[in-house]
Length: 77
Image (cartoon, rainbow, N blue to C red; front, side):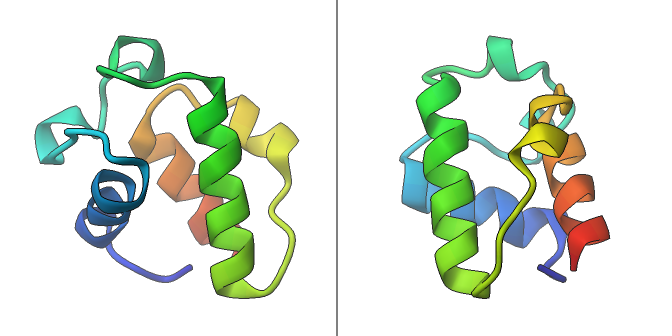
């Protein structure tokens, strides 16, 4: 995934139906309205289907913000 953070946040907003914007990129995931562990699994499934390859969930579990999730995804690209 080589999309910008804004594109990634748009995907989260659209596909997970979460009201996130640029100001939420650094918020702790636990503080995001509507965020739960199921959203992380839905996001992984979506990105794996879109990218055609596996994403290491253990690396995403260490992320504390959407910016960190995006960074993990960028390193996997």
